[in-house]
Image (tube, rainbow, N blue to C red; front, side):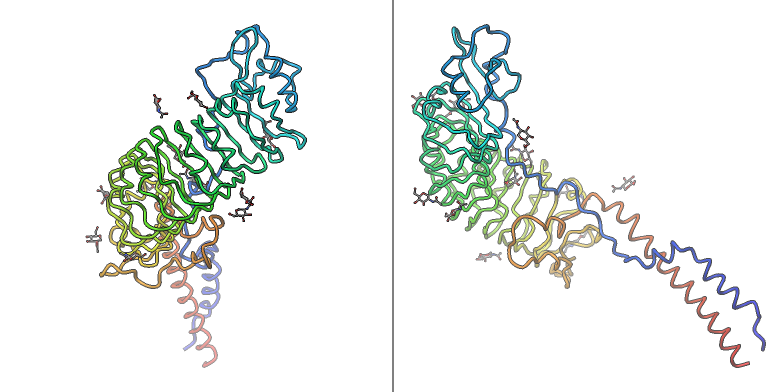
Length: 453
Ligand SMILES: *[C@@H]1O[C@H](CO)[C@@H](O)[C@H](O)[C@H]1NC(C)=O
Ligand SMILES: *[C@@H]1O[C@H](CO)[C@@H](O)[C@H](O)[C@H]1NC(C)=O
Ligand SMILES: *[C@@H]1O[C@H](CO)[C@@H](O)[C@H](O)[C@H]1NC(C)=O
Ligand SMILES: *[C@@H]1O[C@H](CO)[C@@H](O)[C@H](O)[C@H]1NC(C)=O
Ligand SMILES: *[C@@H]1O[C@H](CO)[C@@H](O)[C@H](O)[C@H]1NC(C)=O
Ligand SMILES: *[C@@H]1O[C@H](CO)[C@@H](O)[C@H](O)[C@H]1NC(C)=O
Ligand SMILES: *[C@@H]1O[C@H](CO)[C@@H](O)[C@H](O)[C@H]1NC(C)=O
Ligand SMILES: *[C@@H]1O[C@H](CO)[C@@H](O)[C@H](O)[C@H]1NC(C)=O
Ligand SMILES: *[C@@H]1O[C@H](CO)[C@@H](O)[C@H](O)[C@H]1NC(C)=O
Ligand SMILES: *[C@@H]1O[C@H](CO)[C@@H](O)[C@H](O)[C@H]1NC(C)=O
Ligand SMILES: *[C@@H]1O[C@H](CO)[C@@H](O)[C@H](O)[C@H]1NC(C)=O
C-alpha cells in the first residue's frame, strides 16, 4: 500500500505550526514559586520612633517671640563643641537646638549633636554650662569620648540618646542619669555587668532602648517602673531566663529581647502584660511551649518568636487575635497540625512557620499553593515526607540576615499563583506532549511504510 505522499510534509507542517509559546511554557518548571512578600524586608533603622521626637512641645519656644539672647556662657559652650553661633542659635530653624524664653538670657533645653568632626571634645566646663538641658542627643558622633556629666546636668536630663556615638559608655556613667524618662542607646558599646546597674535608679523611666551595645549579663529581677511602655534590649549578649517579674509592667506596649542568648521558658505570666502590642523574642534559645496566658493579651499586633527551641503544638487561640498582623514562629520545634486557615493567613502582613520539621498543615483547609515551608499532614496529623522546607537548614544558627527568602510564608500571591502559573502550565504541558506524540507517530508510520515498500 502506497502511503499518501502528502502525509510527511503535513506532519512537519503541524510541528512547525505548534506555537512557540506552548513549547516554551511546557519546558518551564510547573512549580513556579510565588514572589517573596514585600512586608518581610527588615527595616532596621537603629533609632526607634518614640525616641527621636523633638522634645518638650509644651515649652513652645517660638524663635521670634523672645528678644533676649542666649546666655553667653552657653554660647561659649556651643562654640567649644564646634557649633556655629554666628546667628543666634535659639533662632535656628533646625530642631537641633531648643531654648526656653527666659530673660534676660535664654537657656538651652535641648541639643542634638550630629555628624561630629573628629576634633569635637566634651569638656566638664562646657557640660557644666549646659546644665539646663533636659534633652541631649548624639547621632553619628563615634569619635567623641564621653566624660562624666556634672551633677547638675546629670540630674536635669530627662532624655538621653546616643546612636552610633560616644566611644564607650559604662554602667556607672549611665546610672547617674537617674531622672531620665527616655534612654536610647544604639550601636554603642556599653560596658556594664547587666542592665540592672544602668536602670535601677531611673524610677521615672518610660522608654528604654539599649540595642547593638554588646551588653552582657542577666535581665533585671526588679521592675518597679510603673510608667514603662517600651523596652528594647535587642542584639546584645544577655543571658539567663526572662524573669516573671517583668510581667508586672502592665503599661508595657513593646518588648524586644531579640538576638540575645536568653534561655529557659517564656514566663507563664506573660499574659499579665495586657497593654502589649509588640513582642519580639526571636533569635534566642528559649524552650518549652507558647504559654496559654498569651491569649489574654487583646492588643497584640506583632508576635515574633522565631529562631528558638520552642516546642509543643501551636495554640489555636492565636488565630483569634483580632489585631495580629505579624506572626513569626519559624525555626522552632513545634509539632502537629498548624491551626490556621487561609482567611487568617491572608489577613497578616507577615506569616512564617517554616523550619519546624514536625509541623504540618491540613491540606483540606489550606491550598498547597501557599508557600509555607512545611509539609501537608497525613491522616494522623504527621507531616507527609519529604518536608519541602529542607532548603532552610542553614548549617548552624547563622545570624538574622540572608535567609528572609527561604521558608517565608508568601500569602498575598496565593490567588495569582493559582491563576497564572500552576493551572495553565499543566494544561499546556499536556497538550504539547499529546500533539508532539501524535506528530511523531505519523512520521514514524510514514518512514516505516517508505522503507518497507
Ligand atoms: C526588635 O529589634 C530588632 C533588632 O533591633 C528589629 O529589627 C525589630 O524590628 C524589632 N522588633 C520590633 C517589633 O520592634
Ligand atoms: C548627617 O549626615 C547624614 C549623611 O551622612 C545626613 O543625611 C544627615 O542629614 C546629617 N545630619 C545632620 C543633622 O546634618
Ligand atoms: C531629679 O533628681 C534630683 C536628685 O539628684 C531630685 O532632687 C529632683 O527632684 C529630681 N527632679 C525631678 C523633676 O524629679
Ligand atoms: C569593662 O569594665 C571592666 C571594669 O570596669 C573592665 O575590667 C573591663 O576591661 C572592661 N571591658 C571592656 C571590654 O572594656
Ligand atoms: C507616671 O505618669 C503619671 C502621669 O504622667 C505621673 O503622674 C506619675 O508621676 C508617673 N510616675 C512615675 C513613677 O514616673
Ligand atoms: C564585648 O564584650 C565582651 C565581654 O563581655 C568583650 O570581650 C568584647 O571585647 C566586647 N566587644 C567589644 C566590641 O567591645
Ligand atoms: C510595633 O512595631 C511596629 C513595627 O514593627 C511599629 O511601627 C510600631 O510603632 C510598634 N508599636 C509599639 C507600641 O511599639
Ligand atoms: C519540650 O521540650 C522540653 C525540653 O526542652 C521537654 O521537657 C518537653 O517534654 C517538650 N515538650 C513537648 C510537648 O515536646
Ligand atoms: C478561619 O479561622 C478563623 C479563626 O479561627 C475563624 O473565625 C474562621 O471562621 C475560619 N474561616 C474559615 C473559612 O474556616
Ligand atoms: C482538615 O480540614 C477539614 C476541612 O476544614 C476538616 O474537616 C478536617 O477535620 C481537618 N482535619 C484534621 C486532621 O484536622
Ligand atoms: C482573586 O483575584 C481576583 C481578581 O484578580 C479577585 O476578584 C478575587 O477576589 C481574588 N480572590 C481572593 C480569594 O482573593
